[in-house]
Image (cartoon, rainbow, N blue to C red; front, top):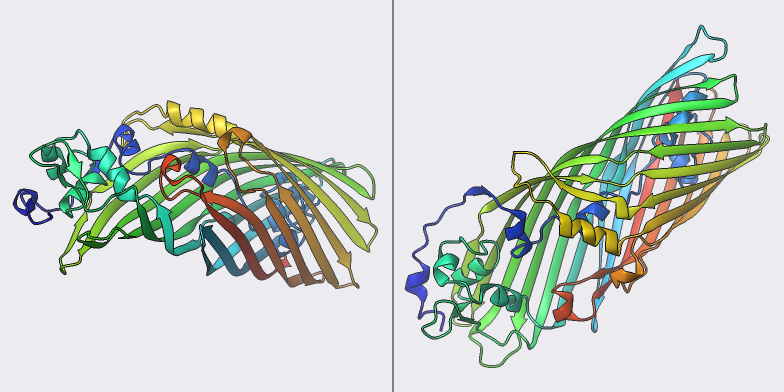
Length: 505
């Protein structure tokens, strides 16, 4: 069957062309910008200093620490002398995926600098504001590294059936020149996975029944992060009210390679296997503002509040796809898509944080944070000119509003002073699911967190370690949910083992 139409399919002129596609075309051809992107850049897991990490991130009312500035800018106002610090370590990302009777477990480990910064403090001529501090810090707000493998699983259906449905009714001349579905069905046409049904120019057949069970292997590799550089200023009024402000710039990098491989189980098919590979690279930058206050209510009680403005992210997606078919007679065909690019905006929701801490003399500190984010306020927007088409994203933003909800996070941390120089820390937290009941998510995406750490600290310098871990679950659909039915189940674990230190200036 595949050789019958070889001549007409080889008329295409080869070559890779840089093009910009309308989001309307992408929506029916490859994964486009949607609610998944909004959540990816809105649900953060910041990496702080050794001290903030060890206490589970519950540091919004304590301050005087490099890691606390990104949480509550008022923390910089509590400094009485300068500070410089760095933390670095190993980040691990574990993914256990289950579908039908198949389970696979993968772990990705990478080295990273969690936070680095310097604070400069100077006396003030105003006695009500005895010190003013400025800070320049950088921290990771999210790390996207992940590896996923699902091998030899039974799938009730085939991705080729999706491509077949796209092509039906489309003239094969449009598939041949790539003007229709250049990232999906056109590639299937070129690799003989789609052939004309008889003499028809608009109806197609596949080399096997795509409604039957296929043997699936799926590999996904992701990498990247959100790095935030913060420029902060703050001071303390009459030794009881600390105020601070931060302007932060973000750099976003994200890449994903997804490889979908199928082996037909239908007897009599000429096809041995086929694979579909998607490559996505995202680069972008953003801007946000943060305001905060910390009040020393008494010698043992401190209260903090902070507000983070929405972050305006300007992103460029670059993407390509390829299909490879392997036939039982030894023939192999492979075709790559053009290079696509699209420029757009994501506005992440604002964040509000309320904190309280209890200072138990020189022996211990108990700290708590509550953070609220309404994920329904995340938005996709087009940009003027550039690699954009002015698409409104009305449908995608409506989906964001429907399937997300307000998220809540509670954090608790404890620091115990073992003696004059050594401190032990432990923390825990929970972050509720960002999904509404209407989303139909079956897993429990609430995040559960734990941490611990230790540090040596004297008047001149400090050094220590911290460990933290996060657990949660996700759904994964390999095909349209209407075709696949039940999703694959993902158990995710994120961990960070850090060392770090600093010195007083």
